[in-house]
Length: 217
Figure 1 (cartoon, rainbow, N blue to C red):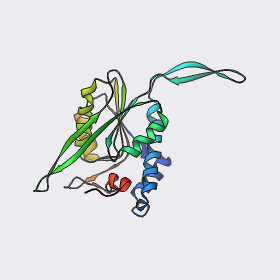
Figure 2: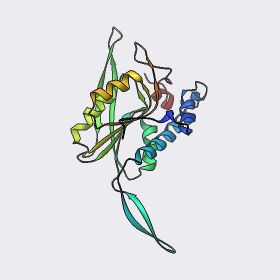
Figure 3: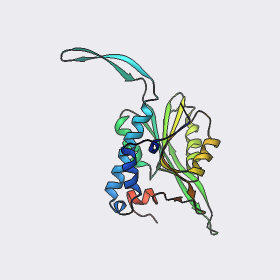
Figure 4: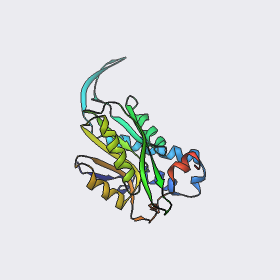
């Protein structure tokens, strides 16, 4: 499988939901914003599930036996707080037996306007031999996801890691693809070419966390 999948490159309902996330008028409805992120989480989970391993099984129906293919193992779903929660929730709707991991990362601002990304908190199950899906709605510089990935690796060595993002800057995506192992698979809704000096994606959609949950101090 290729290392990078851009879902908006094909015509699908993904494009409708991303368009609504970007729309400054629709964004004023935070419940719809969260719902669209959740819908995208479900679609991403479905697409990623096609790359998983399945086992043959039989299911007893009221009229007989049906041969089916069942997911061999549930993934571990990881996300970056707080913006990633609705996106993560959508994935959890499909992988409803999955274990979960959470990473809290934030920008520590300096007086000169520069910043550094800090990981404040992480919780995860044993990741040895597991398939991990690490999701974050936005990839700007890529630093937050890189640190989240490194933090999660303290819990073991997964057999496979998938990274999912709704919108990524071209610069941030290229950075992560160079920094993370070759085996990491990227799933992105759309790629935007511009990243400002303040590390905001253009056209992007704004601050996903604020739009979903309200302004922070």
